[in-house]
Amino acid sequence: MKRKHEAAFKAQVAIAAIKEEETLGALAGKYGVHSNCISNWKQVALENVKEGFSRNSKKKKDEEEITRDDLLREIGQLKMENEFLKKKHKQLFG
Image 1 (spheres, rainbow, N blue to C red):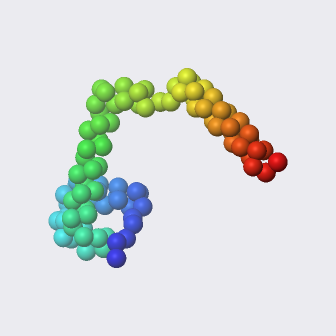
Image 2 (cartoon, rainbow, N blue to C red):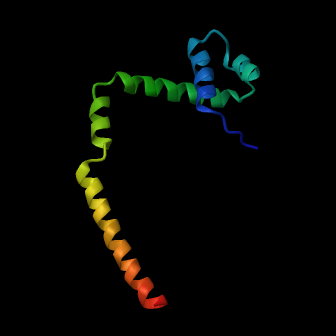
Image 3 (tube, one colour):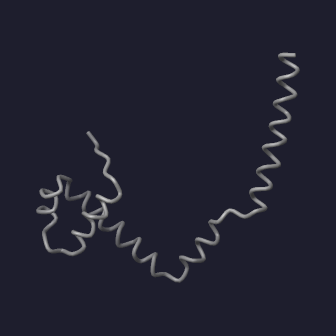
């Protein structure tokens, strides 16, 4: 059965693996997870650290932000859909 672990737990185990004070086998026994999981979590942690130091990370955050125009466009679309549904409801149910 596959278990789900909290992000804080994964981070704790990944940091322990990055420190390399114990082998993956020892860490697996200590934390009760498979050594492959620990290896994967370590790799993910190292990739995320690299992204934190990259100059493009701020640029990516700016690109991901939702603009005011996007929100207004979505509001307009939702209003149109709402009006359409109101008309259909009135036609069907009086």
